Image 1: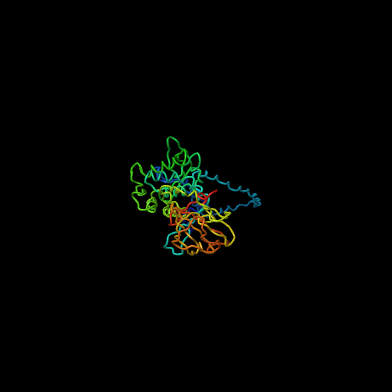
Image 2: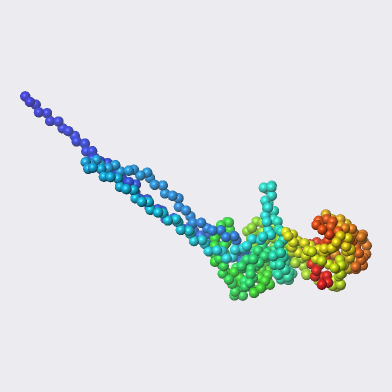
Length: 427
């Protein structure tokens, strides 16, 4: 007997092949536009000229692609096709150079005579050093009397205003400070309806710079820019009329108080006051804080201190420093004469001047004769005009026989009291 057994088979469905799915295309994310820092309200008190920095665009981080799994071809009975020839590589063009941003026109040039040296002790502040240059001396002569006049009229320090003009305009090198604009202090807005627009960089208060187009006041001449600046210091800002009160002479004991007060108010530079002080000292600007000294009567009667004078060095800037007087070259032992009658107040040796004589005159002037081979007068002695007081030498800081001759408005012989001897000696 044949017994038929029926067995139930459960068929399990299996995929014939597994489909390999490549990675999906990843869309590049659109960068969020970088917000420009909020432009603060234009303050007349803030100088606008700052060094240019080129802003950079934000860079998106590279997108990491997933590993690519090669597809497995299904088995076929066809003869394998030859591998295709590799495609010729497509030449890649070099990236185009991005256009550079437009130059900032209202950019303050640097002062060539200003240098900052870092002390060995990290706890000490940077030392400000000034090496006087002729260009700045010429600039001071051009603007000095305007600053003196307006400073005296408005209870302000002429010395501080001149130092600020030097620093803010780089001794008149900035385009804004030159004709026909004459804006020495970077004050914005218009003056008597006149203004000029420059691209300039501003600080948002946190050290971040941004570039804007700004209108700056245009003046007829330097006297007008000093008058307008003095008005700003005396009247302050619209919301605070005493904003610059700490710069007034009547509210301070010295110009150092005024420069310290300006730091952080007129400029964010933490060493702004120190730079102004260094300029005031190097260029003897305190003489502009008082009335211009009138030459006393009899000054035009001075005589040259040597016969047949030959000028070898003039008064003013020389090399990296300031030459206090006029040098007359002559052979060793040449007699030196008193230019005016007076009383000898010094007859001694100095490390720089060598043997020197100083004479105080009745008209208020004091004359000095230095590098002498030998002094022939003593302190307290009265001398006549033309009397021999010394012989020419090369003592002290000297490279050869000559007379160093100074004229001072006071017996202190301070640098801010000196005048050019050639303005009082006969032609």
